[in-house]
Image (cartoon, rainbow, N blue to C red; front, side, top):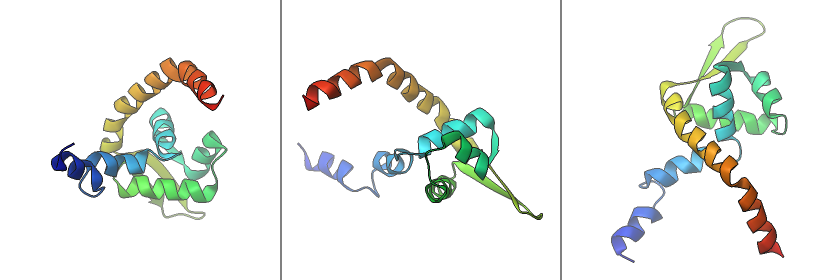
Length: 122
């Protein structure tokens, strides 16, 4: 184990993989990105209906984080009541093929993963 390798992975601010995965690897972000990809433009309540098990506060936090990273664009329309829409940015769209690969991998391996979990907990 070299000092260079330890330093490469230990500092989250200098490690692009940890930095990005900390954002998109949470419980909800990938799901929100995939939902926006399937629907192009959605309002907050529409995203909330797709997920159903997320709190509105957590959805708000997730969308703000994705917006801060430039993966999601938030558009506010000046009308009453206010209308807010969310869609993927070009950066967000560029992440989708990678997420789709992860989805395929998960579908291909979930059965064996579940078996491993059962065996581990026995």
